[in-house]
Image (cartoon, rainbow, N blue to C red; front, side, top):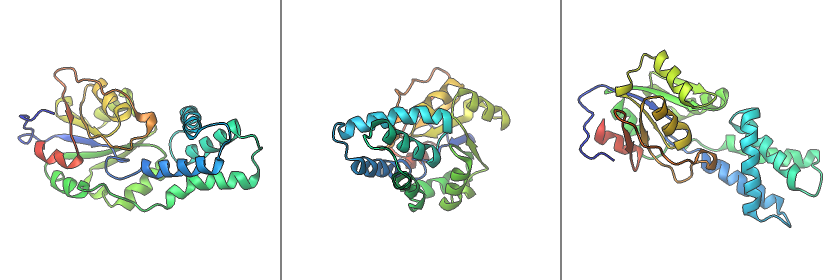
Amino acid sequence: MLPALNLKDRRHTLLIDADDTLWENNIYFERAIANFISFLNHREYTPQQVRQVLNEVERQNVVKHGYGLHSFAHALVDTFERISVEPITPALHETIHGFAHAIAEQPMEIIPGVEDTLDYLHPRHRMIMLTKGNHTEQTRKVELSGLGRFFEAVEVVKEKDAPTYRHIAEHYSLEPETTWMVGNSPKSDINPALAAGLNAIFVPHADTWVLEHEDVQEAVEPRLLLRLGSFCELRKYF
């Protein structure tokens, strides 16, 4: 935190993450995982050990299938096949896929204070939503959220890494000193944005996906890093 920092005298560009920054996302995956582990009811593996296997499978599947429900469903099936003593049948396959696809039926839950904060920021600054994942799934979330009206553009990318941030900055002719990436993920939002020479604003979420965990890197001058307690605190600075 930089309590004395006042950024309101200039117009900034805020690149804002979506999942678990604007709306709840990972809590639904966590519930699906809990249901899967309970259904599996493994005799030898503890729930924690099953989760460790699933984490590793998800890391591998992200490379093959990208992010989203399709990849997650594959990870559940692959985990079942790795550690179950019984073969997977069409009925089991359908049940396991059901844990993943039930996520799509969950209501859109905007994080408290987000809409009012976006309404405040919208006339003052340039805002671009920057989310990664399956394009169809992420676009659907944006539409359901009703938050798209606050943003100049919505970018759905396959991965958030330093080259992606450099591409976005070049595409929109962004000035590094007045460009900020806002998000909950150290791995995808904060560290690669800083590595790309942008500023960053870390808004942690209690249920950030385990594969997004990483130590938050410190900003190298002249770039800045803000650590906020909630999305609403953006109004204090911008």
